[in-house]
Image (cartoon, rainbow, N blue to C red; front, side, top):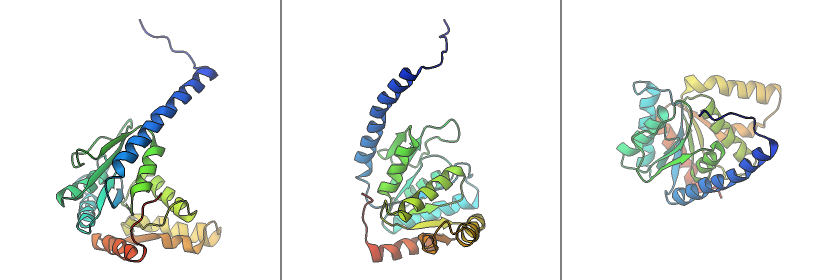
Length: 229
């Protein structure tokens, strides 16, 4: 028999919320246990829709390879596109390759380049975000969509408000990012004064893998490595 659908009452909704706390706690505990063992790593973000023959997929592979060669692991969202490219580059270079997967109705599926013991699955975006920020020594942001922008501005906000330690935020692809950065400079800063001039110092805009590694190396010569907790 078909189960009849009925609107959930207030008490039923609140009961479900209470039980969800335990699932959320479980995701945090599992994430903390696994991520605390990976060592210094850099997160690579970008579109799940980028195809392997695209220039930014190929560049993301190169970026990940050079990051590993400089002594870091690589963390991605674990899916296809730029995420797959990041894990692929880390895998090819023999480095740590971590995938933080999220259950989505489209686009997301595990890529084959994640280390077998470093693939984590999440139902909650906010738990997954904590893992990226808490265990990354840098964000490399390739061209992407709303999810990529969400991760970018979350990190900028947390650093700007001193909620986490400062780390490099590197935008890769001048042709993609320059329009956004021009709007940030002319509208957010110059026209409305909604940010401070120093906030722009948090962000680097580059086009090559070598520039990414140079920024990471230069930053940690001055700051040293430290976790965000």
